[in-house]
Length: 200
Image (cartoon, rainbow, N blue to C red; front, top):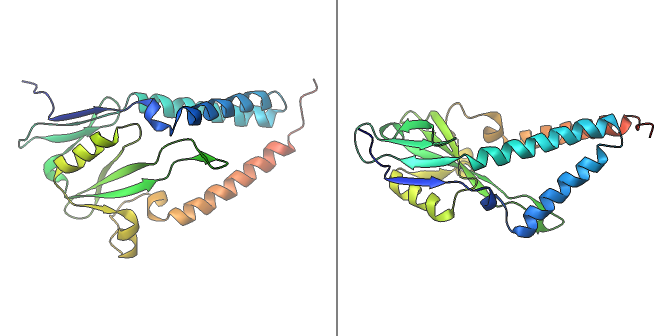
């Protein structure tokens, strides 16, 4: 017999953005990439990657949902696409919170800040992660209270040397990840700018 969840929250794409203006700026950026794609093969490839990434993120957020089963031995915290992933609540000993700041352009906020929850077991190992992107703040607060486990920011755990095991590099060493991302971005732009323009 299937029981209704104790809590359920659906993500919405509109909640990703800081404002209507922020969403408009995103579509303006896509339009600019589309125009630049007509200039050279380098801009065409970069534009295709940017547009594909935008569509994939929007699609993922639109299908994301969280749910919490009614109390019981088999109760689970469900998340991901249509709340299809599940971790037994009894296995969750705590949550390490990774903060992701919102994007902005020339001081204008575009996307809202959100969190990634790293679910940790009693041996301080990562069980799974769930993103709050697109969820209402009130829903996130309700799940935080209902899980009934300690929450700690990753920044504090990093300083105290208590990071959960099996964290990926971008969560374990964000500074090194940022440097790597900048180097990759520079290499990509050099390649794009070096590509000859189309003959038209």
